[in-house]
Picture 1 (cartoon, rainbow, N blue to C red):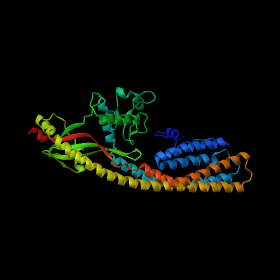
Picture 2 (picture 1 turned 30 degrees about the vertical axis):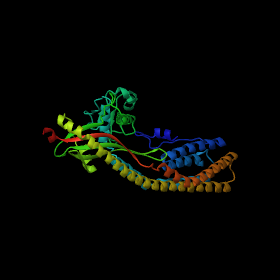
Picture 3 (picture 1 turned 180 degrees about the vertical axis):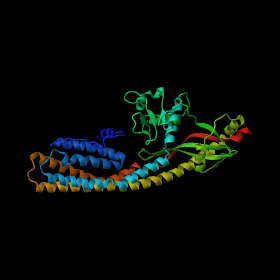
Picture 4 (picture 1 turned 120 degrees about the horizontal axis):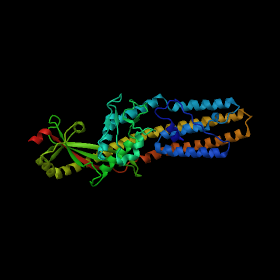
Length: 428
């Protein structure tokens, strides 16, 4: 139900509202069906965390609301139920919560450097891995320098051709900025969850995790870049590693690629601040051939470098384990508070609804037999749901703790090495 709802509420939609109707039958089968739906949402909630409680609440609110059942003659009952739904429903998601979520999104994009430029570079570099020349910038319309064309989809990705064409088979212009050309029918917005971008990421994974090099793989484990002596005075080295943290039940909690780097002083590595290393990586350089004696020097000293790199990885592993444990501890604390708050609100909501329906039964005497039967089924289900939530108030925090209980230590896997060489060194 949630999936179908999402599919009809998308960008470019002209109508501001979408209505979804659910038919409720006055018999026990309807309650069984409702329980099945809520059970499925409960599974989703466990996977999604606290977000799922809001989803579950909205489904229950709509499906148990008598105002959407066949019209009752008693307006007072409908008004009471609608008032209960309105009072409690809109107290959950308020402007402060929306602002908080928005800030979290912006912060995550900044921390992960998810920019339009980086998404463009990711796709272009991924295309190179499959022997494709890359995207062609649009040059002759209002999307100049903002839109791109992917001509001749790589053979290995031909199953994704439909994702960048319209219903008539015409090639769409690729954009990475949702503020540019999104409402147009001839554009397609690429984001990290788009099938094409997911394929690119998988291509990088295949190359990165491969233990041996063969003709299908084009990403080397070591390389070099030549920089201006104004940027780099002495030779440098940058190490790329994969950070992986699993819970005690072997579920992945955290995964990232990190870098650390050093200046090369003969056979010694002098480790540098991360900001300096990042500036090296972001600076444009050249990849011209290097003299034989420079290559021989790097090969000769690598055994010494390797020992120092392994020591640095052990140090990084200890520091990252402590850092991630602290982050998880704070995350679990906030998540437990949030979940308890949501469960408490749900209990209050159901209690108020039970009270309203019970009072209405006492005041209103001309219910039909069908209506009385349906009300009794609703009350039975609501009371059962309330008991379940009261139990979850104590069990859910323990589940959250278990889900994010870090195993002994995180693991660090070396991925690759980049040598950085000052231009003047090559001329000596």
